[in-house]
Image 1 (cartoon, rainbow, N blue to C red):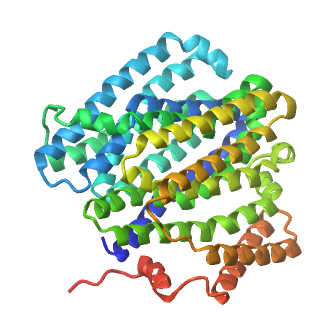
Image 2 (image 1 turned 90 degrees about the vertical axis):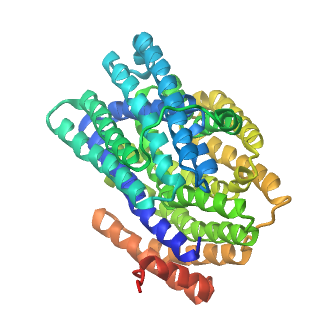
Image 3 (image 1 turned 120 degrees about the vertical axis):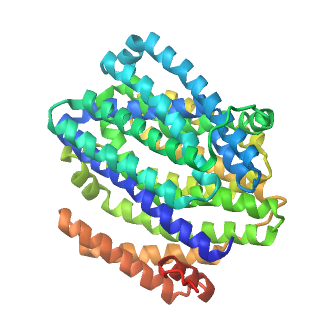
Length: 483
């Protein structure tokens, strides 16, 4: 896969992830300003429950489609692989759905919401997990335009329908129901597209043992990863109440916005790297990993410093002055934690290529125990700041452990000189933004644009990129010539 195609794929997927980022930023003011911090706390806990159920239900099987079918040519193997995974995921989702219905009352009491929310949530989880499987079909065969279309449709559809529900006065219940409608519609559209392409075939589960042997060891990693990312919101709700979740979650969402720059790489790299690695193109595999890390840090490092300086202004714009006053300091801590997670997500690809899912699982289990244990001990004592600090500690452990196990026998070049230049350019940017002293929506936007321009000029003057690396950026924008 040439560099040009990789660059194009990242550009296409970035547009889809823009929809995800916009959804988070749009929902934040809609729910906090219209429905209040308490309802936003309930909303966030429902979203966290969906993200917990997905890895449990799917058992890591959707990703096996990427790892095992990326280089597959046999149509029967492809059909059986896809339908086997979808069948097992559907059966598993029905079990979880039934459990949620049976225990909807106590679960609703735990989250501080109504029983109907949990019942709607049960159906959302079914289609969330089925959609996860179908998204990975497009991912496996690098059909990134199709993937981007469906991701964009789902996210923009949710934005539109949630706005309509809130405007009509249906509140948090209508907003959650909107998620179900859009996920059902997305599933039907993707299913029709895939069936037209590969046809219909009853699964024989020919390689399901091999798939499960690869995916099940990743299940503890997926659940533990969720624990590090989302369990803090449950624990804050238990110890401090839904209002404090409503204070913490908006700051977390803005700090987590750096994930937007990482998500396209996480999507594109597994299929591209799996194909290269299975074809024994080791040098190209290492080069893609090295460049991906460099591109991510190029954006993540200044983003962390920029969010640290503008945290209170940005949080006031997207939520309320009360929320901003109580939690603005959370933003830079979460942003730094996401930077660590992003670096892991790229370096950790090496362990996935080598099918070392048991090691990945062990790393994340330790990180989750560390995160939950520290939160249980310190949240009642020190409040919501504890959750941000423990997230940094957990991600730092995951990154260090993955570096140890990934780079010990698969050396990938890390440009420490570039990292130093990026930090220096970010400091220069921060100095000018501080001098600008933004106050209000318009001046904050100007400060962000100004900071971006200053950073780019500084990094170019310091020759942070080689000519061939700049060409890869240009390839994202150039139209492909046809003969």
